[in-house]
Each structure stands twice: as C-alpha cells, then as structure tokens.
Image (cartoon, rainbow, N blue to C red):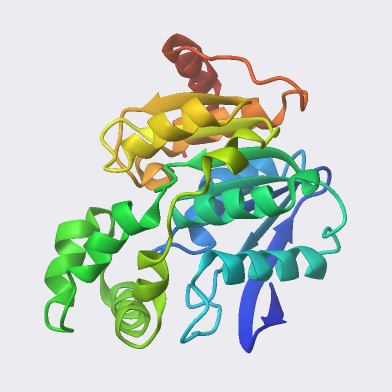
Length: 276
C-alpha cells in the first residue's frame, strides 16, 4: 500500500500482479478499493497488473474539503498513474458509478492512453442521477434514514465499519463541496462521445435508476456494446460473479474487437468461476 500526494490530499493506492495494466475506479460515498479487491482485482491480477486507489475523501485516502469535480478527479487519476510509472503508456480503465464517469472523462481527454474502457452503471449526467439523492440529506439527523433508504447495500454493515461509514458520510455531505460538485456535472457532449474510438463495454443493472444513461451511451459511443445484468446499481456487490466474467472476457479481446454478446453467452462465461 502506497500514498500519492496530490493537491494537498493523500491518496491511498496499491498494485497487484504483472502484465498489461488495468486501473479500477470505485463509486462515490460508500466505495473504496475494497469494492474491487476480492471480487475482481485479485482474479484479474493473475494475468495483468491491476492498479487500485481510494478516491479523495474515501477509504484510507485523506479527507478533502473540495475537488470532487471530474477535472480534479482526473488529475488525481493521472497522479496515481504517474506514481505507478504508467502515465505514458496505454491502460485499460474500469470504473463503477462515479468511477465510471472519471474513467470516461479521462478517456475523452487522453484517448491515446486508454486501450479499453469499461463503464459499470455510469450515472451520466450525475446532476440527474446522483445529485437529487444527495440533496435529500439536509440534516445530520436525517443521514441515518437516508442511508437505510438509498444505500441498501450498506444494511449489513455493523460496528466499526458502520461507524466509519457514518463519519465519512458526515464529512463528505456536510464538510465538503461534494454535493455542489456533483450537481454541476452535466453530460459529456455528444460530439466528444462520438469521436471516442476506444473499445467500450457498458455494464448496467436492469433495475438501476441510471439505466437511461445506458441507452444514451450505447447509441452515441461508436465502438461499444451494452450488457445488462439482473440487478440494480451496485453491480460489484450485487452481481460480482457475472461482472468478473464479463471483465475477464472483454479485457482478453484484441483491442480492435467489440463483438456483441448474448445473455446465454454471459451465462456461459459465468459457469467456470464458481462462488466468490
């Protein structure tokens, strides 16, 4: 485990394995490196180098009172890549939720440095899919009810893990610009998206509130395919086996190939991996 200093913030990061590099970015608020570690990063590291990091204000990274906008988060990603000595070579990017928006924004700014792109339930635009939920929390007293309502995936957390989450949420929602930064996140422009010639895999939950973003991105991105899974927004937690199978299959493809894939093929991919 290492730390990277960027814009007054310390980012916690690590790398696993050797080979072609894949960088995995977690989601907002409840996400951290652990979101990817056991379910996907460890298996993928058998054949490639996997880079993980906790975004500012998340996990073991230090708290930041500002800088949750996409441009600053892309600078954070660039600093992590430089720290691992991979800022001048193409990498595969995999992001869930806000991590997917960061990966997409980075790819639009640096298309020559991205081999393949995987967007897992990207909530584009965040001002429509994410901000309304965050804006519901007006008081610290209302935070607990919001967590139970909106973040069903956290209901199993108890003890110290839940205390840490509560402390992080208070800091992010009441002591930082996170909500304002998310509210300012508009859609990427159609022109930029249409010019993005990077093989892209879209993975969305059928029951995700972000599904309209899947329809938009699949229509505009020129080299993309869309796979839907029978789950909601938190795919790394809700469908880890299916997600890992799709990642392994897609990242093993030649860079120029973006074939379609049927539900039966997804099922076939899942079979050999067993239970995590």
